[in-house]
Length: 559
Image 1 (cartoon, rainbow, N blue to C red):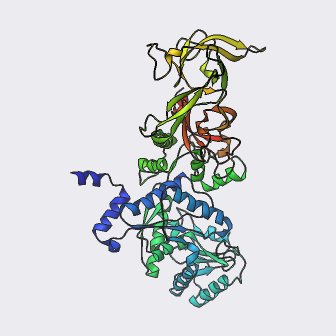
Image 2: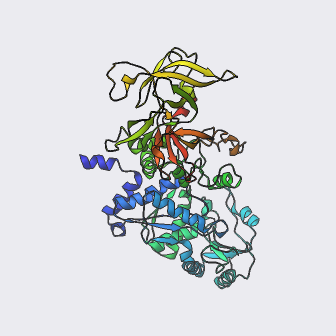
Image 3: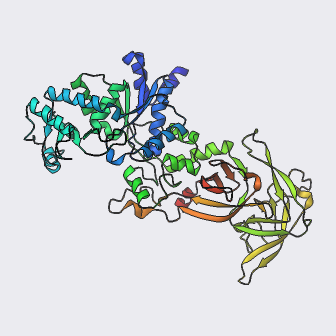
């Protein structure tokens, strides 16, 4: 019964792989690849693909290659290559020595193209891009054959060699496959295989004047590397017949292309083009801005590799496109951080309290639990003194009936400390509350209170003498609507959330975090999860809000 239940839980790709293994297809090997184009930073959608490809290789004791699709040199560079490698490693995966580039195969790909020309199945077309588009036809009309379609093999070989040698101007000719201009699949209407681009390449320099198209390089690179299962997102489903046709014509090893639904996430854009716009137009502060859905942005914000892997598992692998609520992603990070993030107390909008009956000059060291969810997390020491700070919104002079925090004549407990009572309110010349004068009950110390006194409110606080001043960056969702790209009449940037970043420069935090390392995660009591930003230095710590304690957007949407 256990085996049946396990088999029922397989996603459709795993079912295909297990069938292939059982039939000894490809000698029962499982070999996948993750093939990013190095033209930008990876985002959360790529994280799903990384987890899928490397995860399948791990599950079936196979291999997964990291292969860069560097066939478009105008948009690619080493910065993107290095960021991609860093992201894959951070997510917890290794490609061992199997790091490849499509450019590794440029000579082989050229030789394959020559072989296709010799078969009479590829030709050089001198038509302009506009002429080619006009000849392509539509979904309801067949295409028209190019006047250059029936050139001889010898002429095509000569022209293609001259393209390679740089004898023609960029964009003046292309190499096309000769398939079927009347095919209902437009991708089979003599697709382009090579174009002339006299552009410097970040790896091959100026060695090549022609570069392969994605459809040509993709399948043949898979074949060269012995990939068994070429897993792509759903938009490549219509490309699969071309993938198969090219491999079949050349009679080379033929991997199986399998398509799955790409990730679509609410309140997010995952188009590289749009993400690049956000960066280049300075709507965000770079690719690793914590508001960006890039892996480096999520990492800087405080997301963990475990939370992203768990998210990928939770949303599963589907055959059809859908949209995932970003709250599912946020739940994954809360769920992970709740297990191990130490708790600390931080006051972001300070209001001073003087405990009038506490001994002058006395400092008391209190014990606090680091993480109630982790019995091995231990405790930390927090200093307590006569002057402390609480949050301004934890006090109301004229509170409503169910306000259980501090107000005149009312009592609350200071977490890990004592019960205090508000005796007097101090205001400035404008009538604004600037200080509370309170008394404390020395018999109510947390952990040794024997008074039996009950209060409904518990507040976090910071000792005025000992607290560290920090900068807190409260990040929120970058867009105000679920589908920023959904309104075709408007620019998606019109929906950028003006409150996606609020900087608090004078927050106060307990001194236990003084030596916190970059990317260290914490839960600020009653506030949310935060992590140490890389811009922290010895003079000031900077904390990024990773996520709130609860889904506050859900509450807003219900109102």
